[in-house]
Amino acid sequence: MSGPGAIQARVEEAAAALRARIEARLGDETPRAAITMGSGLGGLGEEIEDPVRVPYEELPWWPRPTVIGHAGNALIGTLGGRPVLGLSGRVHLYEGGPPDRVAFYVRVAAALGIPALFLSNAAGAIREGWHPGELMLISDHLNLTGTSPLMGPVVGSENRFPDLTFAYDRELRAIVRQTAAELGQTLHEGVYAAMHGPAFETPAEIRMLRTLGADAVGMSTVPEVIAARALGIRCVAVSCLTNYAAGVLDEPLNHEEVLETTKLAQADFQRLVAQSISHFP
Ligand code: HPA
Image 1 (cartoon, rainbow, N blue to C red):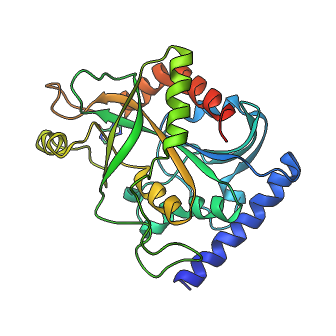
Image 2 (cartoon, rainbow, N blue to C red):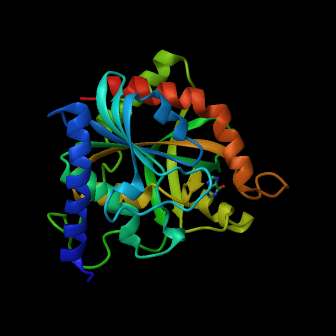
Image 3 (spheres, protein in one colour):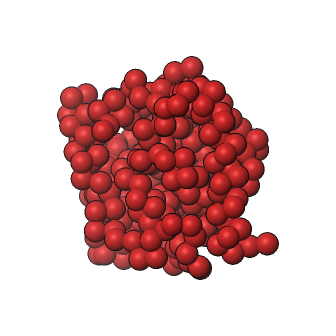
């Protein structure tokens, strides 16, 4: 069985399973935010206090990541003194299956009443003067994946035509910006272009993206933000710039380099997220 009824039923089944684990750890508190840890950024999970770790395979219908650098655990605990749901590992469009797969966890977060989503990813730096190892707060996006997680009939209470004018929440962005300033961290702010992948871009594509106004490029986040906005979840997202985008340097890119560079940015990234969450509404 597939279709909107089936998707909603699966979402509710997964939400019920996760709710039981959340209650065991947090009582009647709802996580203030779900935190999606991007490639190589799962170390943030270790900052979550006294976490209950729920492997994705224990959650019905939950898509399992296939990419190196992505674990597959939900982590329930507190971060920055706030109850959170950490998601270590996500699936990407390029892993196959229908596009709504990548947004499954977002729909579960909505079913659980989680009001905010803090996303992260690894991204290639397009903007001149921005360097691997630096962090970028996403101000807006270009959806160049050619698809949407909302494609098909409307699921549950979702908005058919979600507004994306303020997709990246102004108040939450201000909190993250302010937190970076308090920590003395450089935090760029710019436009993230989402590509379908899994191939990295060509130098010509990167020139195109620069012309279109992109500052960084990656293969995730945007489908999830679109689904979250259709469900009224507030979003904020940080990219870890892991490499110069294709053609910026006269050398090839690879996934190992991406994961290596996330190690350099991990400490800053973890501090930024933990401290920002402590100021979340
Ligand atoms: N392109 C696309 N996705 C990425 C990149 C990139 O250069 N770096 C990390 N994820």
